[in-house]
Length: 71
Image (cartoon, rainbow, N blue to C red; front, side, top):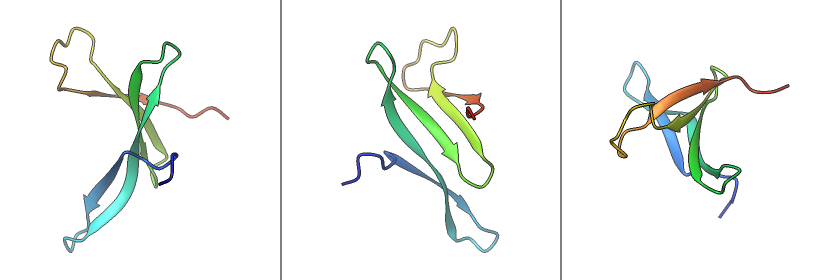
């Protein structure tokens, strides 16, 4: 098992209906040790964290919070 492997894979459908691996979701811990998830879409260079939207009380819903990678 690879500790750096994503906890979830992200797939899209091709025009012909084939599954295409386009990215992953990783579970990480913040400075306080609380878990959070980060999302990366390969070909788009898209990066985001998954978290609770402000004012949202439903813990089963996650918002996509986009961020730019640091150089």
